[in-house]
Amino acid sequence: MKLARSPLFLLISLCFAIIIFGTMGAAYHYNMFQRGGQSVSVKRDANTSLVATSSSHTADHSMWMFTTVSFGPRVAGFSFEYKGVHISPQDMLLVMVDDKVLFGRAAGEFGSGTWRNTGLITTAGIISPGKHTVSIGLVTTASGHSIDIKSLRLYQSSTITATHNLPSMFPSMEIQVSAIDSSSTQIELLLKDPTGNIIGLNHPAKSTDTRPSYYTTKESNGTSSVGLFLKNTVPGLYTLTLIGIKNVPFVVFFGLLNDTSNNQTRSGIITAGAQYQIHFSLNTTNNTMNLTLPEFPLGDLNLDGDVDSDDALLLAPYLNTKVQGGTSDPRDLNHDGIIDAKDMALLKASCTNQNCAPKM
Picture 1 (cartoon, rainbow, N blue to C red):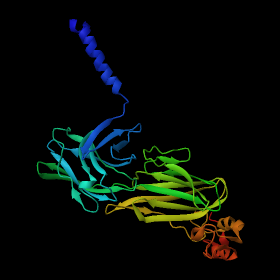
Picture 2: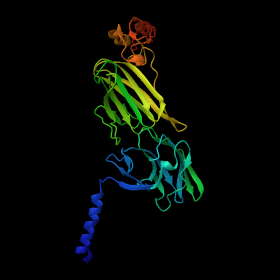
Picture 3: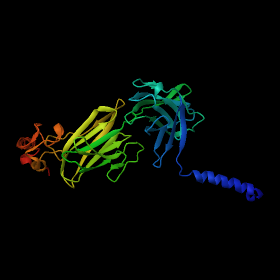
Picture 4: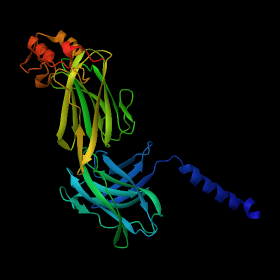
């Protein structure tokens, strides 16, 4: 009892309380990897996202893949295969289990284009048996760089006891809408991702990328664009909502920054107050991300899947004018550089229902 009332006990208790409560809510921070004069640190931001920075990088770029793994009481560690894609020697591969950094490797040691194995990443005596989150990250000099990963293997001594298939390190994606014939932004965007997060108008993305996640820009031809930039994508179904401020033709660009073969566009005409939705998906096949967009028929200017009198009404105000949007202008259906009766005739010939009646 005397100890409980002694100044020494009170001092120890006060110090313990300061340590416990002083660290609550603070961001985690780790000096996690050093090699060749470079150092990398990682922390959790206010949104519990992992953010990594390198002493050699002028920008803060990192992307992460997370998976839950059950570690048995006799598991010695794990390994996985990886392959650099569009990387530079300054990029670094990082591996964490929960909040412990267990592995780091500079991209200059493995380069691009060849599958490699990490070798055994030891967990015995470091983490307790049970379910843990394995985080594999890439700290990179550019948002277009990425790394493919697969086949996480658990080991008991030198024997493989379990194998987990891992997805690709998902690339960055950009969506940009250009308003044709307009020097100011006339369209706003909202994007809902597979996890339910919303990015866009009044919903700024929580990103550490140096490039804004929601931005407006003026093109060299005088037209205005609004765009979304997703630094880390996830597989699943996305919903893009276009919100019209004024009547304007537009082109939507979809692109994965490390695979230009997936770049696609869709176009139409939007009116003030109208909202169009485009549902698209990102999925992996053989560790490659695939972008799947719906196909809209020729003349479907409001992107509702049908060609009808509603589309004809959208086209009518632009008849007998020259094309301003090049070959991607949705109003020039026959691509002859003029919006005229020939385009209207082509639209009506493509109508889904008899007499171009709108769908009920």
